[in-house]
Image (cartoon, rainbow, N blue to C red; front, side, top):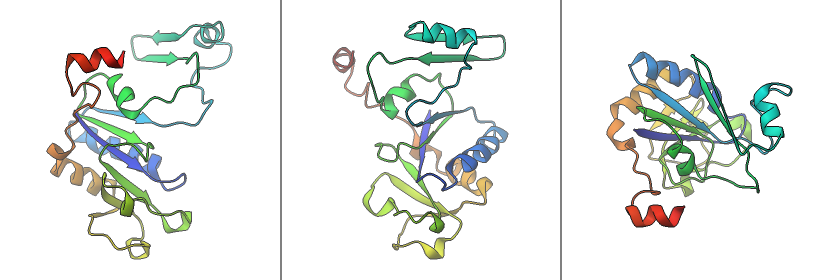
Length: 186
């Protein structure tokens, strides 16, 4: 499984890029999953529906399945902030995991940046940034030797990833130290 993060501030175009990138990777025969960081009280189940009612009643996890899809909702009993590695561990094996958000995570990532966001760049201070994806490379506030990718060309971003795919092979730090580490993590 290969993992690549896409980090940047809100409004930079991460979601749109990932949406298009998923299509290009699927067209190349790849199975793609996504891990996305969300803010506080997001919801995916609809008030009044069974999954919502079970969760409201106090269920820790609710799994809803049909012949077409499955969704798992976990309600934390105390406030928790899972790491990107814990969320990746929840996934079924696939070819690519695209991670949206988690800008401070210790995974390789592509920074998505637009000059009109008025936000600082991440790449000068984050050794995990492997490329910058932007629609205006001439306006980057700091010089870089990193590859520059065109935010408006998701096919080229897909080719960049596929052309260097072995670089993104994922090795979970959760299981890196063997069985003793697994016991400590529980």
